[in-house]
Length: 562
Image 1 (cartoon, helix red, strand yellow):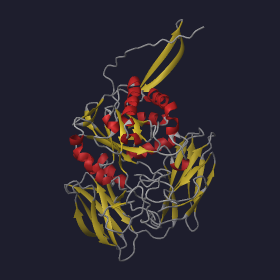
Image 2: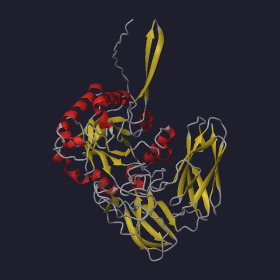
Image 3: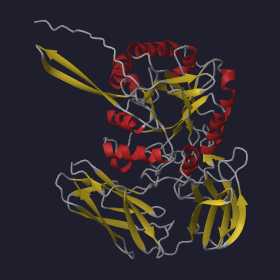
Image 4: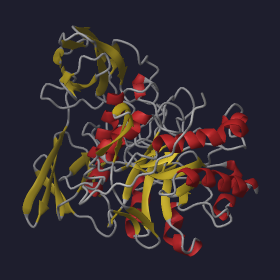
């Protein structure tokens, strides 16, 4: 008996639909049923959303008729100390942290994403650039995808589009990242082929390619296959985009590449910008002996920018539809600017353990409606040190800073400033910042000089988790002084003991140079913090986590399994 295939096309009307958006990601379920002889013999449920969107030459990005910016990040697929095998809760936690700073976009760099990621982006409201390839037929590395390009690229691209095209979070198809063919005549031919494959299966979304040579002579751009000009870096050229690419639409497909180590601050003038390394292909032999990078947001790669440099440009022009920053989280590998034994990246706005770096709060002050006032750095220095004190703030006219009760001046942002700064001689005690709007206090924040390490504090992101063998509780471990202040240089070895219905899935501290195992029952704190990830078993036996360190008060926390 020969199988027959019947294609059925249907149109549905949804009166007064609830629209999907980044702030209200409303989802519908479509149920497809196959009947025979009056009986349902198969059914399939598709989760989707209804929304309209447009990339426009002058106005940038419009979602459901409203002009917004795509405030996105690029992310690798690893989950820090948990490795690269997908855990849905770990992905959800990453997205929650990103949402907390106002992020509304994810670029899947540089490969098709895990379907779990897109499901979460649908539910949580992220504008996704779904990226297929990191190279085409020309090699980037000896054993990369170019070896199977001829055999697999069409099938792989078709499978990507067919799998992902019903996700409302997917807005852009990217056919490549920094492709070598952009400098070769074959770039035009291949770009047209790939765009044709995508359009045959989905003509509702624009196509881009992330180009690190974004100029009119670029062979991929000249193909005419791109609906969006994907610009990697080159923030200095953003203002001239419409002149260089008349009638074209912009997306910042990869931006920034700033470098920071959480909780590290170099006492040089913080308003001086350093580019590390001097060039991508020259070994880096400068920097700090401990392989850290200052967290003042004044260090970037030579091809990129600081976080503030690019954001200032992005804010100035409506035609700049948005950006995907490199990167949301630090990730394992590419430890620019340092060589081994650095082993993970410095690019993240958030470190490998999921702890925000200071610049996280700059974005929070710009991208959210939360009241924000964040002071940096810590206040543990030596007598005679001169320290630059920064504040990120919003919803206020000015910020006044006090040192040990004495005002050291009022500051306010001017022009396109994204932070304010005081340069102070160090004096042990308390820094207090007060933000005011029309004379009324909005927020008050304090940073105290910490004493010796005295105790451990444990804070779980969730104290109740599912007894399903997969759910996770991420427990932040803080090393505090007697008064409850974080000890900013604490490197105590913290030992974990877990009893009940769970186990340790991983440990981390966010240090880019730590060679400690991720799979252990202990971890040194880095700048006062470390992390232990607890995995649920399948029996409803509550978990007790105990943390000890030599000379410190012990802490424990209970996790309920349901």
